[in-house]
Image (cartoon, rainbow, N blue to C red; front, top):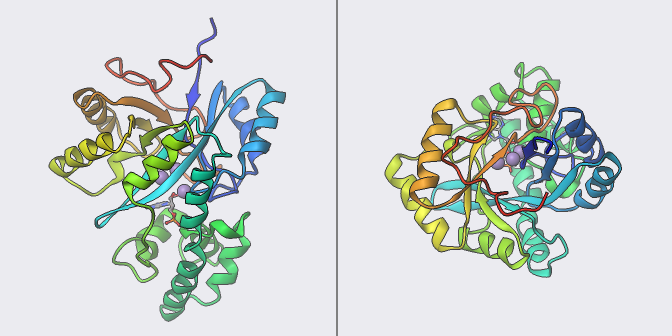
Length: 280
Ligand code: AMP
Ligand code: MN
Ligand code: MN
Ligand code: MN
């Protein structure tokens, strides 16, 4: 049997990736991915075009989404895998959380203007394939174009993260809500890139317990922003809390750092993959 290459986390220009869904799927096929989940932020609008492309190219496309969540002072991301994109409950939930993005963008632009970066609202919108999904990445790309810094990573560090001049706090979905929408649509809820949340081990374990109690079923272990140490740490935590493990690049764009589609190590042997009971 052919060795499968699962990439269960990536973005198209429906959210803050740069490639249209069909081009993203074509790139995944070129990179050797055999099972791909498209997981745009808070939106499922790219899935029909991605499914069509996947059929043509002979790879399996899993319907996915990445939901933004506010948990206390933390912003978390929860992946929904194998969701039904037409689920009324999910669609209503996603529409609700996307609604705040426009207002937030206006405030971000006002703050950036005060530190000498004018016209960023119009600039950011030029980079947004989907005007409803305007977000920090679109601002970052515009600011790189303007020569404010050399790459998006430096822009985030200097302007767009907590405590920096272009950062606007925002209230996203709550954890139980997001997991509930995913489950209502028949999907599996997976905590995305846990290694990126600024919290100690005790708080992380508290989060995993709560996530499980809400109906969460797994965590990302191997993902673009994780280090080798994270792979081991979260494989252990997945085992300890009896959670499934996932693997995904979190690809957004060629040449923006991180990993290309499917170009990741395999899950550690102690993990039970989120796909263990899928027929692919
Ligand atoms: P938003 O949903 O508008 O708050 O944007 C969040 C997105 O910004 C994430 O999904 C990443 O694509 C990107 N992002 C967040 N933090 C960073 C960072 N430190 N460096 C690069 N990109 C980041
Ligand atoms: Mn993103
Ligand atoms: Mn994320
Ligand atoms: Mn992502």
